[in-house]
Image (cartoon, rainbow over all chains, first blue to last red; front, side, top):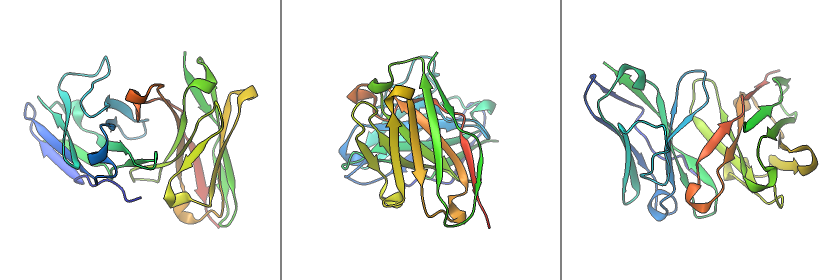
Length: 110
Length: 122
C-alpha cells in the first residue's frame, strides 16, 4: 500500500489561509468518506483535527476545515497562527479495511 | 480516564524480534479497535495494523505482512505487537492508539499510548 501524497511543506503568513492536499486513489481517499487529519508537534503524539473528511471534533478550532474532491482530500487552515506551525498528516480507510497515512506536511508560519 | 500505557524502550540486534505491549484502562476493552502506528526518527507516521480486541480479528499493512503479529489478552486488557526479522530501518517509536467505536468514526484515534522506542543496531 503506497502512502498518500502530501506536499512536504506549506508556508504562510499570520492571518492567511493555507491548504494541504492529500492525494490517493479510488481504493482509499476517493472510495470512502473516511479521511482524517492529524496535527503533530515535535516529540508529541498526534492530535485529531478532522474526521470523516469534514467533521471537526469538539474542542478543535473552527479555523481547521476539511474537504474532498475525487481522490484528493484537503485540509484548510484559516487565519494562520504561530502555533499552527507543526506537522500535519492525513489518513484514509482503504478497500481492504486497512489504513494508509500521507507522508506528512510541515507547516511553517512566516 | 481512558489511557493506553505502553512497554518501555527496547534495543535489538538485526534479525531479532521485538514485542511491544499496550495496556488499556478506563473503557470497555473489547469495544474499540486498537491500531499500531510507528514513526521513524524525523519521518512520518506509518500505519502497521489493527486488532479487534473483542474477537481477535486482525488486519495488517502489506508493508509488514509476514513480519508482524498483533494479539490481545482480554483478561489483562492488553494488546501486543510482535515484529520479527528486525532491520535498522525498523528503528522507530511504536504507538498504540484506540479507534473510537462506530463506523462513522473510522480513523478517529484517541488516546495514543506514550510510545515505545525500538532501536535496531548491531
